[in-house]
Picture 1 (cartoon, rainbow, N blue to C red):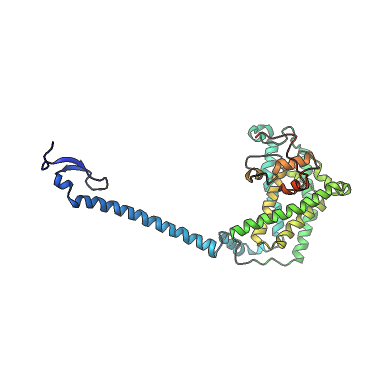
Picture 2 (picture 1 turned 180 degrees about the horizontal axis):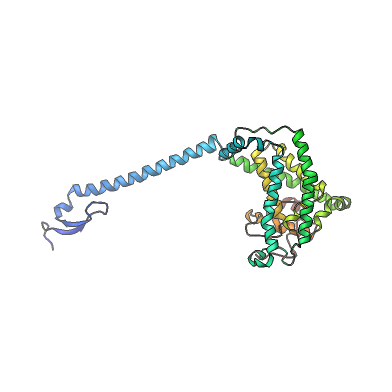
Length: 329
């Protein structure tokens, strides 16, 4: 056994300046060495705690500024209303926004249709794998769409530009939650309106033959078929899309967001693909119809009349959950 007066090897706390050394028992149990280690450890803990408290205070300040007084969307809105004021105030802006969005959203699905079997990993999600749009079908739909936009939407936009004064731009942006609720509200209202319109145009033969039949020219829909519509149907859809935000008193940023999202989900419904990131797969409980449900409507036109959601078809007994050709899951 070592004599208490003899020195021996021991280790101090890792935060001490001396990690190893020769010490006597008296040195080991002396208060200055122990206090030095504890002081350094306490300082480190205090420093970490101060940093975390400062970080928490910054988070609280950001949360208060954006969700209490301002909106997360305020920087975006300020940029639009100050730097692009003349453009976004024009009555033509919503038309340009929706038309350009339509062709941009159609492009990826159009590429998938053109490439075809050369991308087998994409074709796995084709709802009707044996059906692919031909060049003549794509040109027909593009021609109908361009004709409607040039001879119907453009004159209506110019007339609106001359008749309607430029829109007032409020200083305050909508809260993020307000925008989300507003977009969903506009989609739900449009869903009800078009469900009734769609149902009547299938049940009344004259309406179907005169107005809606052109849209059912293809039993296997594709993206460019989205706006392969008669002039009356396109005007009706455009009227509701423009009127609904006025009815719901939506902020302009909410209105534009609704218009762009509405164009996207309409293209997605007709794209002919049921990808894992499709809207219907992101929204649970079968609330949203999506491409597979609308594909069924084009195969069996007496079902699935609602453009987006599923509840009206379930209430009226027109809901169908099957498809003649299922995509690989």
